[in-house]
Amino acid sequence: MERQAGQLAGLVEDVMHYFGAQGMEEECCGEKISSGEFRALRAALCHDVCTMQHIAKSAAVTKSGATRIIARLEDKGLAHREQDQQDGRVCCVTLTEDGQSLLHRIEDQLKNKMLVILAAMDPAMRKILIISLKSFLQTAQDKKIINGYNVDIVNK
Image (cartoon, rainbow, N blue to C red; front, side):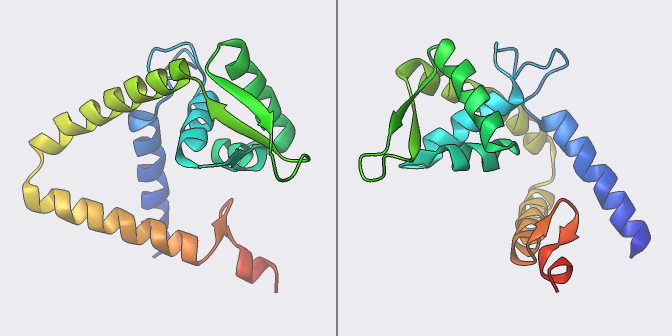
């Protein structure tokens, strides 16, 4: 199983590199945003109320890192911050129309990249791939795997 773990770690890294949103110039899909900014845009679109904490978690940065990312997105006219109406201590992030448009364009590029590869795969293998990845991710979430460690084991 140790050998399989090493193989899987390498495969996951290759998949992230080949299919990720970040290009060689540290830009996302040829757009003038970083992969962290892309993940922040996605987080803001996916949550009805998107806090800086959501951004930090989605972009895998600290809250101060999330603040810097959102400041850059605001400067680019892609997002804006406002205080939560119910809790003034909480800062909420929403996308501008330009931010939503950019995010949809990038997601279409990523989806089209996948369509080309999936079309070349055997339909049965596509199903196996999706089922396997869902199971793998669900297991990681259930076991609370964070930075390579099982939080339940580490906290005992």
